[in-house]
Amino acid sequence: MSVNTSNFVALLRRVWLAVVAGALLAGCASSYPPAPVSAADSEYNYVIGPGDTVNIVVWRNPELSMSVPVRPDGRITTPLVEDLPAIGKDATTLARDIEQALAKYIREPVVTVIVTAFVGPYSEQIRVVGEAAKPQILPYVQKMTLLDVMIAVGGVTEFADGNRASILRTSEGNKQYSVRIGDLIEDGDVSANVEMRPGDVLIIPQSWF
Image 1 (cartoon, rainbow, N blue to C red):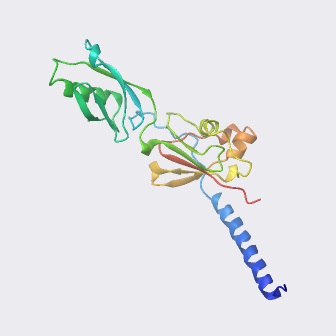
Image 2 (image 1 turned 120 degrees about the horizontal axis):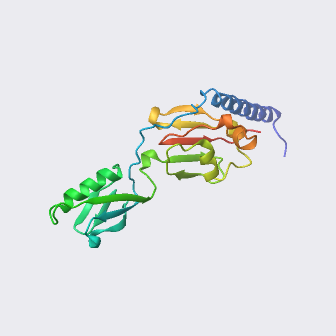
Image 3 (image 1 turned 60 degrees about the horizontal axis):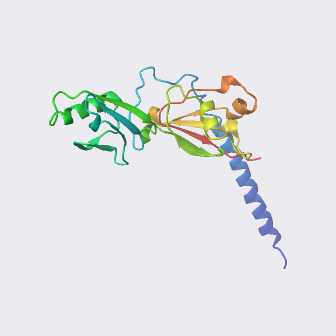
């Protein structure tokens, strides 16, 4: 079957333009400002999210003390206390709320709450997308760094362009910063390690070559 030369040339031109456009887009990714080395809030307090497990201790009332999961709707249920909202509260606030609920049944309850399994609220989880070995969602931990995240996801794939990676920082109105994952995990350049913030999205693009 014969091939129309003009159509073939036009096809090659479109392919070439697509490659050039891709290269230009790749270059644009590096135009983001470098991520700040320090990003953690010294006053950060962990707040409870769906999937967390909380250990509730009611002083002198062992029958009311137990470990319970936070349901997907963000609530917990314990003896005498049903459907109490827990999401978005720190452990101390939740303890005071349980005391208030129990005060209807026992005199001057004293409650301690300890979070024993951490997932955190969706808004504070770290999301890793793109060419990570194991893209996933991670609970945020204070002082968590880019290196911590890369260890958790098992590094990058062979197709990743780590030095074009970026962090989408939702806590700053979706501002985007560039990060150098390649320099960090391949060359051991510790200057490329930066702190993460709650809600960060780490985007690892594919290499064009």
